Image (tube, rainbow, N blue to C red; front, side):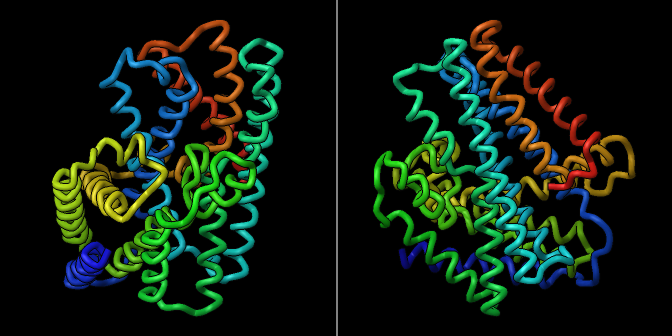
Amino acid sequence: LLIFGNFYFIIGKSLNSFYMNATTVNASGRAFELDFAKALAIVFMVLVHCFEASPIGHSEAYPIFGTVVEFLGSQPAAAVFMFCMGVGMVYTRHSAPALLARRGVKLLIIGYGLNLYRAIVEVLGYFIGTSDAGELLGDFITSLLIVDILQFAGLAFLFFALIKRLDLSDKATGVVVLGLLVLAPYLPRFGQGWYSYLIGDFWYQNEETGFPLFQWLPFPMVGIYFGKYLKEATDKQRFYGYTAAVGAVLFALSTAIALYTDRSVQDFFDENYYNMNLLQVLWSLGVILLLLALYYFAVGTMRDNALTETATFCSKNINQIYLWQWVLITPLALLTAVYLPVDTPLLLLVEMALVLFICVLIARKTSWLRI
């Protein structure tokens, strides 16, 4: 733990040295590379959710395709979203503790409201023969209490509202976040009881408690650090050059440590994805920083066009699109299981494109409803 802790802080100092040595002036306007990152994150989320809700996601017929989808739906999706959420906390004008707390409570209510919808659809699945009557009550409770990304986002906003209320510095907050991450694997698990799902909001309990707070807080925390450096830097090419360098170092060192200790790197985005530990966080941050640098050099200086407009819209309405995709995918998974099983990569991609198109269309028609 001491070795990992020292490694974590050495990387933090390196980030500070790299970024603060860049030419620093103000950064105005939206950072399109972040909008683009969030837009791709929602594309990858829809893809992986369609995949996991389909027969192809429960077979081994297309192992390489499945591995690629699981990777795209992990660090480049949820972790990037959480990182950008931290960046957004730097740029927002609504950063008062009360406003952050209000946002957090709203996201928690929406998250459990979505759970209720999915639980009701589980019940309806019984009537068309896709759910086992004997497991109906258990499936209903699981769907109702499942810990997903909206629960994490809500608790993260509440956490940072408390941090602001206590007036803790970024360094002190980083120590708290690191401590919670290191502590989490040693905290008790309580099996599959209903109360384990509530505890799973904070640390990992089972496969239905995704994104527990203690183990995923490093992503918005590092996003906050990143956002402050980005806000000061105008030499963005140099900034993202340093971002790529730091990301490469994190990725290479954490991969080397994993291989040396006989850890499977694939577990970082597959089997052990939700149950984050320090090594996984470092590996994931390496992936995120490399991706953000890649996005900047690919599209960061692009002039306004249909792509930039669509990506910016998706970024601003990411919560709406996220909700609508579950509204569509949940019953669609039941219907396709009976009438048209999605059991090939082509069918999956068609389903994903259709769901994404409808979600963006609905979000455009209801743009007044900002979640």
